[in-house]
Length: 339
Image (cartoon, rainbow, N blue to C red; front, side):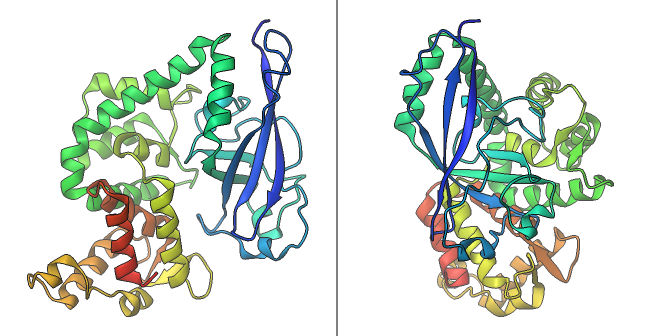
């Protein structure tokens, strides 16, 4: 059949900046010539480990550049596309790529999780545009569906933007805690009714029609189960990788024991509100700002004595919604945590 193709993922190298460098190559049965698609699509990624999104430091003591993921053709391991082969639409900044951890040159700490997740943090846009143009000639519906899905997400996010910009932190952290509580088996997936109840509980108004459109996209496998993280990102959006990098940097600085969790007592010691805008304006004291932060964050934590990376990121995911400028967001983190 004209336009059929497969993607082969290869590891290029691992560098000293804690990033994995990859490329993939498309092979086609017919229709698209090898010359057209011989261009490599290069991208960088980071490991999302069993300690949430903390990069395993052991990896970067290696002096060689052994393949991290073996050359091969792979399918999604979880989410709405589970079992489906990777295609061009899966490669974009912020995308999570999942692989079985067995039979790969991985660290023991990473292999503890049966599924390895890599998050794409940068991509060769020129190569992507070239490949998109080539594939689009044969499979126009391929990218049309991507555009339609994006429109649904943006429509819902637009409707909720005013609400989220006013109370984004409490909504996002609250949803995260609520989903972790409802998810009794720890799978990370919940039903349509669970999500509807959550929207009602947090006073997020999404019409039945828009919810059904959203569900059709997220529940592509028709299992009536959707990943909690995907759902939150669909309705609230997601921080870009530039912002996430500084959130990770702050958490890693606070995580003295490298366990993935930070004691609340350490957060209190390290939090510096001296340059907070309300403190500078004389409208609040440093202690008041610190107490408010710890109270808000503590309410979202499953353990009131410590905060996990996912809980820490949820807080800043919510804060990020109301801050349009990347540099403003980063400066807040720098001033608060000295990074």
